[in-house]
Length: 132
Image (cartoon, rainbow, N blue to C red; front, side, top):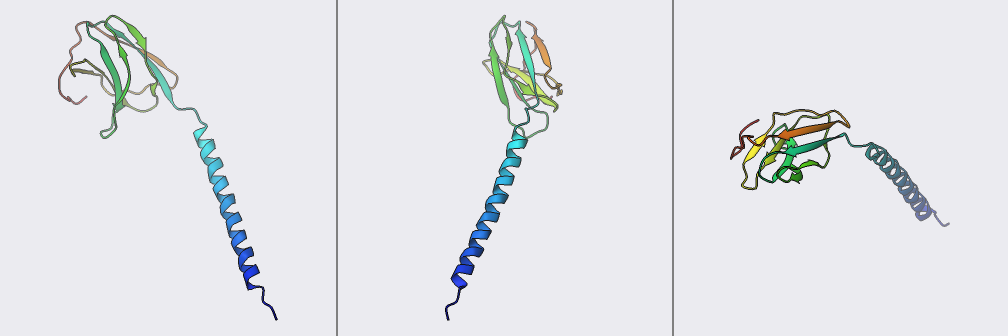
């Protein structure tokens, strides 16, 4: 008498693989849906009235977040920079080529807002890492 244990084991393994594939597809579809939402972004334009090229950056207001440079603005120019996060507090800063900084207090921006930052000719830039 011949037994069908290998066939049953094969069918059980096939069923288990099908269940894993279905679960993986559901998670992938959920991930795609969550990634399909637009990012919460705002825009900033910088008017540089100083005599130096400025590098503009932001970092999360909470300590531990990395700094992101969003563009450079030549002396006397006004530029729209790369988008910045909206809906969360960030610190904007302008940095001279020698490393001196002008930091703004932490602030949040509305979704799709555009904010115009005028940096006057007499703006006080500081060396080091002063707390906002």
